[in-house]
Length: 394
Image 1 (cartoon, helix red, strand yellow):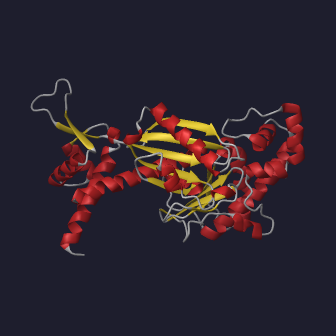
Image 2: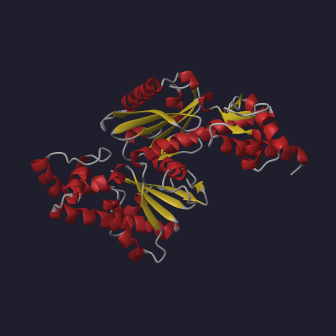
Image 3: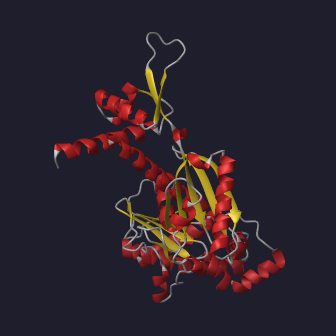
């Protein structure tokens, strides 16, 4: 590589390093910043000038009481420079979060979406949820620098077109970037929900220290987000992690998740529970048949416990298959069912050594049903940073 090519790259890498430090503090002296970033003071001075030019930092003076001499020069990251939006479009609901450039969530809006909705009606519902979230956050449309949306199914990573979506058949062929781009004056990215969930877990969840992770979205249906060597693995068309292949394997539940299995395997027990107790008082991230079944099992109902054990045995075989294929360090169980915690994790964890001689760690997501939007926000933030840093050499 020539020196003419190396200089712009080094300039960008130094800026990324300084930004990483600045995002973690309120304000910092330049000498302390140079030490934390492990860069020379002249290099930091040059980076600060670059970041000031693109609006990412502000300078102030140290007004600490009792300090003598000339006030020290402080710099801070301008999180208010712009905003990002993360969108999770599900079968039954839409969840939208708005954050500043530090990733601090300013507002979240959740609205129901009927499974029977057609493409136009579902998109209209998503747009209404976005507008409500922006209003709640006090953020104007023009202040949004990027948005990222999540959806079930296979999303072409190059175009944002939904190639396959079994749970929302009318979604096939939809270009989410184009359709939702009409709601913003900024780029819109699109990805599979499990892919974004694993990004969220590695950013602010239980997988922060793991470079080889599988996130299993285990709600109505199963889906997996895969990180290998610190990078999301999507496959050629974005279909990696789709779990329809499980239907080809004997004794596995196919791609049915805990919610779907609760309504099929536990049909009679769920019917009895509905008749006698109505909806269970389980954490509100978990609804429907799964909530009824898990709530009853938690409260000591023997039949519910037996059915839940059977369901989790089938889920464990699916998780074990992934562990055998990909040999991850960690598997995270997530989605609304994460609200059940160890009630679902322990039976799966107990079975893994029977299926693989190298069982991974297994944890339950602490982000719950927010993991997808957290990952969407992180993806939007990465897009904004990349775009702004591209201006350093112009």
